[in-house]
Length: 335
Image (tube, rainbow, N blue to C red; front, side, top):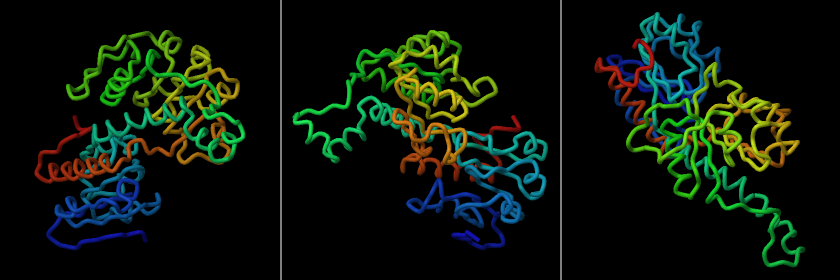
C-alpha cells in the first residue's frame, strides 16, 4: 500500500489523491488540501486499487489514473473530482454528469513552462547541443585540429517561419517568443479562438493547413486531441513539409502518426523532430521513433517545472475549497 499520509478527523470531508507522485514527488506539499479535510495521499494507484481507496471519499483528485464508468458507478459517495491537469480525458464525463459528480480541471497553470520547453527542444534540434557536447568530450573536436568544430550547418532562427497549430494560451505564448527571436509566425487559419490579454499573440498570419506545412521551417503542435485532430500529421501531410523543416510536439502524442513520422525522418523527408508526448507513455522498447538520430524525445515533462506544479496544486486546492463552499470553479461538466 503506497499511502504517504492520512489525517483522520471524523467531522471532515474525505479527500483522496490517487496518483500524487507525478505532481509532487516530494519537493512540494499538500498543506492547502490538508486543511480542507481528511486527506489520503497515494503516490500511485493501480486500476484494481482505485475503488477501494476512494470508497468513502466524496472528493477525489487524479492526474492520470482513469476514472471510468466502472469506477464511478462503484463510488456512490463521490461528489467531486478535481483533475490535476488541464485535459480531462481520464474521467468519463458523461457518467460523472449522469451521477451528479462535479468535475473540475486546472487551466493555464503550465503555459510558461510548456512554451519554454518548446524552445529548449528547438535549440536542441537546431543547434545540436547534445551532439556537439559529445563531440567535445569524445575527442572528435580535438582530433579535427580546428578551433571551431561543427557537425553540420547551424541556422539562425531569425528570418525563419514558425508555424503553430493551436493558438490558445500556450500557442500564443510560443508565438510571442518566436516573434521575439525575429521569426515570421503563421498559424492555422480555421482557429479563431480568443486568447487572454496576458498571453496575447503578436500579429500572426493565418494559413490553410497545406500552405502552413509547406511554408513552416518549424511546425509546433498545441491543439487539443479530438477526433478531428487525431493523426493530424500523417504521411501525406509530412510530404508537404520542407526537407529542412523541424516538427515539435508538446501537445498530445496521437496528433502524429508515429510510424509515418519515423519513415519521414529515416528518409530525411523532414530534417528532425522533437517530441515531449507520445501515443503510449512510457513508450515500448520497440517504439519506431526511439533511437533515431534526428528525433529527440523527452518524457512528458514540458508542463512540470516547479513553478507550474506549485500553481497546479494551489489551483486544485482552490477547486476543492470552492466546491466545499458550494460554488465550484473550473467545472468541465454539468454546464
